[in-house]
Length: 156
Image (cartoon, rainbow, N blue to C red):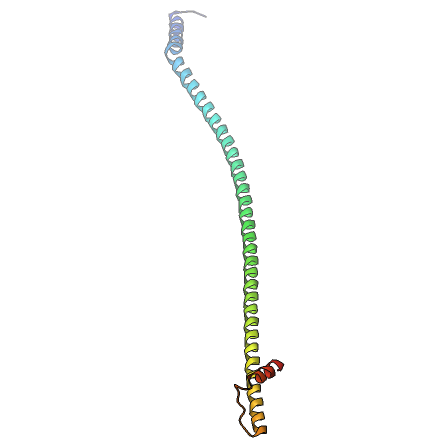
């Protein structure tokens, strides 16, 4: 094998190419690769952080939903209790009003009965006087016999 000038020149050209690539091209390529690796790593970290945030948000949403359901149940229970209390109070008020009306009606009935008895006594007394007048065939003086009439009324 002959080592001639062509082979040496090719070796020199190859060495110059390697030096040029290592000096000017390789650092740019390594910097681009490092930046790309950093971008990918940041993206993966952001994705993992996003998953963690999603899990945390889902957990908080579940807790909030459970809390909202508990509050809703509490509000419904309070509403039912208030409704029951209101109904019971209305029943008590209606019963008290009915008792008052019944008592007033009984008092009015007692007054009417007393007036009717008094009117009946007066009518009976007048009939007794009229009957006595017919029996005696004369007019009886009501003023003169007032004590007698009052006594008759008391007996009736």
